[in-house]
Length: 498
Ligand code: NAD
Image 1 (cartoon, helix red, strand yellow):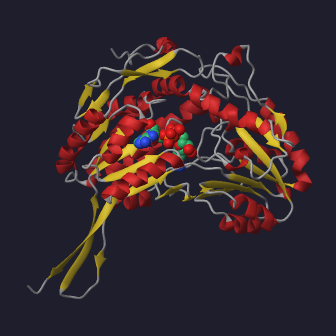
Image 2 (cartoon, protein in one colour):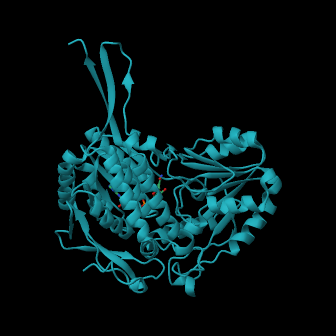
Image 3 (tube, helix red, strand yellow):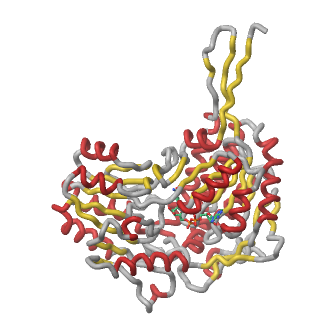
């Protein structure tokens, strides 16, 4: 039985079994199987369990969503927005419980990461609730005797799939964009970290009619693939890796349905010689998302330092990173927690090991984790900095999705732009200089969808966010993103002389 109402003190023992939401009912999988969600800060300890859903549950959820769509699309947009505002308030009222559960399932530090993501999530839901009445069309001036106008109509049943790295905010994003726009949703969180998304669904189900939001859990290959292939799904919205994104696009192509893809990245951070200061060092640390263990799609994991400041900037960076406290993510003084799963931990280590075995590579700090002591109790990896890297190495080209930063020197502006753009990804970028014309010139040359100059922050509600190149298709996080990705235009012309 689910034990989500445990006092917070007991949560380190895990939250027991949580169910799926289908047509307003909380259900187990028909096969009776459960999947374990590990607490990454304590190897071998369970954070909870979720049903191992598959094609049967996907079918039920999609049919429930299709049925609910008939009436939900007719609810005035402002009313749909009001439901979102209530959900955001209810989430905020339980923010500490959400932060603890989030810490338990993802291994993120509660003080530096989990609480912030909960508040961002409330903000995100509130943003879409607030702009609901902007889902409007236009009048086209075709002539005095014609009334020609357009409507923004919802698309239908949305299949939403999210990854484990920001499961609460990304779950909320799909819910808020799809449902505010009048669609109904079948959401599939990652089995690695599904618990806060389900807890959010518990709140949503108090304010939304049954079938408008359905949440199914299961493996990507069975549950996720069944959702992609279901004939009654009208739109796919996927956040995850570029490889799975390709499979999502293939399924969408079979049915000719719209698809939004928010995929991976290997983003550059470019430091000009005039930005060799402590503020930029902190911005680079923020941009690399070290306190999220580097597990962010927007992580600036390729640092380009001008050769004139290469050594002195790195000295400051290493000294600041060495002060970061890693450990038990529920401890208030911890700044950096654990890698989400054993699999991901092993992937990160294989990248580090591979790079360390290359001739010329230098590990300035971090590297392979300790085999004993408190950090060996969970999937902890220290901030790792590598220099002497070759642009062709895997660690420079591929997304590690861990706290691993490669540092590359540069001489000329043209050269650094070329190196920064030498990637099949194009998600985010960070540029640091006090010379604003240089900063903006570089920002315009960079092939990325989300660029920041002189700060290393995350995405804010209202940013039209999405990737260039193989980092994705479509935009989310903003009103325009919701309109473009979750509505379809209908053009209606009336002959007034009739
Ligand atoms: P992943 O692609 O392995 O999995 C993402 C989701 O897809 C999970 O729910 C998984 O179960 C599901 N899935 C896997 N195989 C599937 C299949 N064949 N059919 C349907 N669904 C399937 O990614 P991950 O490891 O969970 O997350 C990390 C990746 O997500 C990174 O590449 C990261 O950059 C990316 N990401 C991108 C953004 C963005 O906004 N661009 C945000 C967060 C994470």
